Image (cartoon, rainbow, N blue to C red; front, side, top):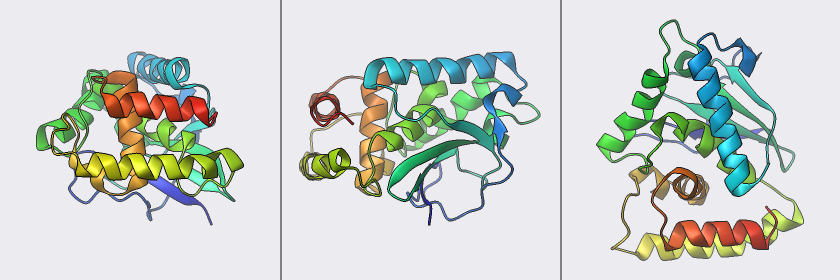
Length: 203
């Protein structure tokens, strides 16, 4: 059974276990708007340069409305990232419309703020590939204790800033959002801790 984690934009009912359908998959090269394609490729490169190469199988596919992307884990390993075709390759898709998807979430307090909204979905989904509680490698399992402990500490911290409600959904979404902040947002003790965990456990 494939476990999926989704980044759910400005919607209040963010769900880390996406239960919708994943439609026909297409390569990233199928993105018609060259600027959008370039921004997706840049987002992937930036993630890889900051947090390391994790998941290279990234496709475009039809997902349920309101879902920006999903990460699929299968048999305990990261299998694939699927970006929603309607967000990244719709009829009128532009880099502004992709950015607006995340900005809506920033404005509502749903998503964790970054300085690169156009990269939010891609970064969030790649972070799920770095670690989520469906992964069964020895390194992922070893890191779980530290990540859960960090999540608890973060949850009890009343002075933390810049985080959205979606990060509170569960430990998987917390991890994806803190890593997104680590790549494109304002650094803090949690983004630093996340980077240290990735390094320590070679995630």
